Image 1 (cartoon, each protein chain N blue to C red):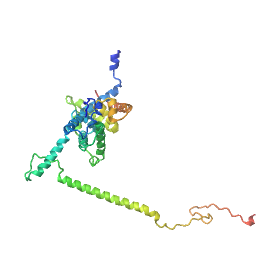
Image 2 (spheres, one colour):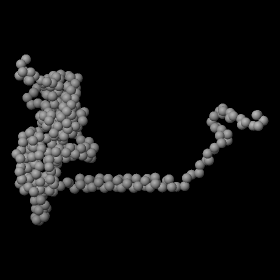
Image 3 (cartoon, each protein chain N blue to C red):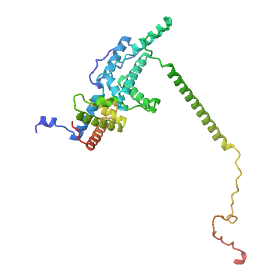
Image 4 (cartoon, chains in turn orange, red):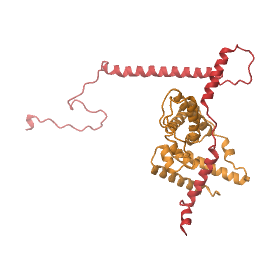
Length: 199
Length: 146
């Protein structure tokens, strides 16, 4: 059974673990699992984060997604494209979270945000200005559709190219380009309306 | 402007570059560089070890402070079961109601129809009572009028 070396770019790892399955030994499975987590963990995390803009939820769902992958392997399921499988399961779990009682009963606005978004070596005025701008970015992101947020997260959070985003989300390159341009223009307009923020 | 300068100049308008900067800044601060490790085999092993230990060792009344149980507390599990019981009952009631309504819809067309007033075919017999000035009907042509 031949295993290809891991690629650094997210796109190249798509079919790396095509033969990962029940026939492999436990040690091999663990190594493959670790490699998959290293390679696609942040990607899966970011996709869930894009859905809810909440790091705690993203942590939980990301872990749950990888645990399910492991369970599938333990049950002898063969997953031909683990990356696509992980993204699909993460999206489904994120959607299910929206339907859960926990979400319906209301969750608190994450309080860590202000401290996370504050710069360390800045004066109070710069810090306030930065926090305002980033809060505006957050509000703007909340107004977008989850699909648009996914694209922006992959582009600006993980520095993916447009082709890599199209491959990860299984959509056309022109759609990615169009959504990115539209979102950027809207945010630019919002920032212009709100006032000047120094770069 | 030489070729190098041309290639290096930003292709986006200033405002959009500004927006791009803030988007990068936002995600840079919120997306972690390193995720916490996930080791499902360790979870399985510790769970099975805990079960094995619980089965083999005699029960001790002294609590081990270092042991942190993953089990749901009894109180919360009891309230959770109560909630689930209510959900089951409400679903059952809803199902029964829907079934009864369905039967009713099926049976109503077969019930005996209520007697209704016969339709008057001759318009001269009836005059609408809510009309103050009824239009006079044309007189029937009699042999004397010819």
